[in-house]
View 1 (cartoon, rainbow, N blue to C red):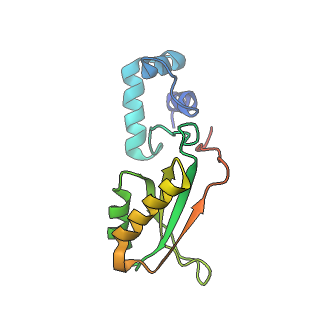
View 2: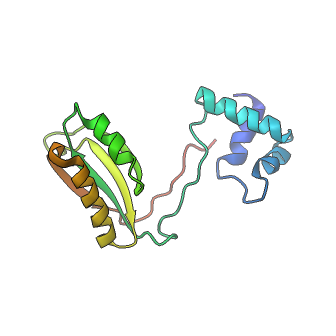
View 3: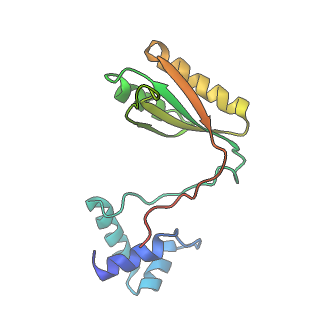
Length: 155
């Protein structure tokens, strides 16, 4: 990573400035032009030095207080197809495959859902259950009990 790349990462790792032109502000802070900041960020995304640039909402502050990780046991040969279908649901914030930890943890598909109440979240989990249909062997719902700090690596 070049010195300018590092300055850009340090200037953005806690979030973009909440101003009308955030990339121009980053450019001002690191001492280069806005187009150079944009080009360097695109290059870092393309080669994997950074994974993404995106918003990280605080669901609690938005009124979504029933946040649940739904976990599903589906056949391994169908988990990719089913995971794509579940992940496409508008109310699923993220969905991914994880290895089973038998005998205690048979689940291989995880989907995070958010609701303003547990009843609302339960309805969303039920929609996933219906989508998975006969492929579903077991599932559980793990509700959040506290907010964890959502940050990546800091330089």
